[in-house]
Image: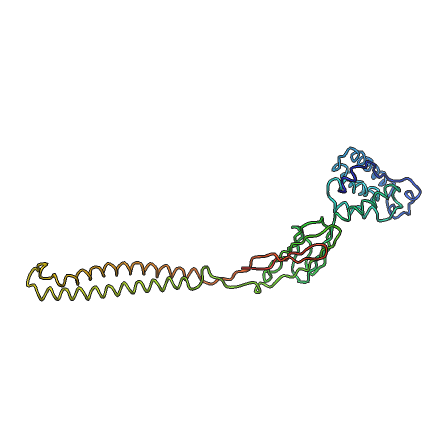
Length: 323
């Protein structure tokens, strides 16, 4: 919106030649030699030509050179024009404050009035974030850029919308992320305190503890049942062999053993079933033992979950923990 308003105006600020501007004791002129003023005016004139030609990046470069020679409010105001067109409203607002530092005296009347109008417009296009922390050794970043080393209290001017403050400290402290949503013209505050590592730690397992032990115990039970069937089969076979020895002096015919054939058949079936149970049970015992090993408790730390706290002029989203 500010850029659209500015786009309708093509006039540029120039260094005024009035009595106040020429006074060597004017605050904005003190310590600036005539040579420096001449260099500043040269860069300013080049920037003005570029600005009127809507070459805002190139014009801004010239104005930046100009203020290195003479930090005059009129030059700052032209930097504001370029920055607004480039949608760099935070920098525009900061430079506008410098342009208005000495009030109306260093500016032409029309330029000063325009500057006041832009100040009102830009005030709704920027916001402030104030972050405080008290823990020693904690470092903070704002939107990925270094902000402060705690303990500290820092204020940064930002564009309205979402911003992220991240706190990191010694290994005994859990990192913390706070999401802030700021509204234009408002100040958003955040107090960053990192939680101790042990506060968020807990012992977890890959599976519920009962599962590996159930597999292990079930395997033992199956293997034991298999052994039992083998013993039973052996007893039946001994009984069958006893009948054979009693009834036959040589080779027995099926008719002689027809009434006890079930003993032999049962023993053979139980042997097969017993071997199968022992194989399956043994595999389950091995699997259960491996699962018990893999399911050893390990210390883990929580993931982050957002908690939204409405605040005057915005909202704070602190990232709490869940496992």
